[in-house]
Length: 167
Image (cartoon, rainbow, N blue to C red; front, side):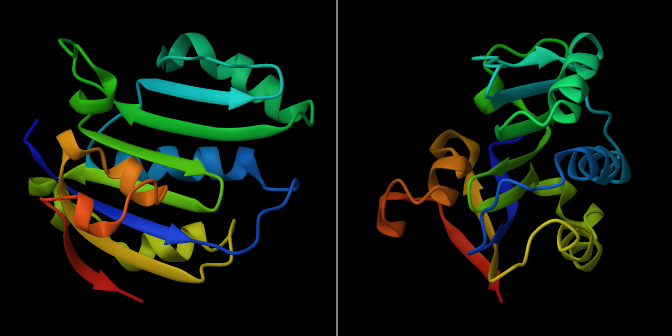
């Protein structure tokens, strides 16, 4: 794990209750695998499932799929690879992808940046959202890229932020 991360952030203006969570979930797992990692942890917030922390995927996947299949409202899902010796999931991930409100974000270690096929990522995610704006940025994991994506603070708040590309 290195301090610097690169995030691929896709925003949409369309938020609806009919999002294809099942399709997105399996596509996201495949994207992570294409970068060279396996998905081993997940966090979920939904109508009946509030993980409140990361959970082992192998113990949680069936429950997650049942929640999706039941038609329950899903608020967000975060899928990641954490090393065996992790202490804090928010900082120790090697790779993560999250669907949250009006965005989808894939975050990788900076050295894995070239392993991500950005065109394939955007194309795959466009199956699930209408992308109105995208951004690729570099940031220290300790400034929490998720807070930047959620627009909780102005850009000037993030000292390590480097916007690499937009569209």
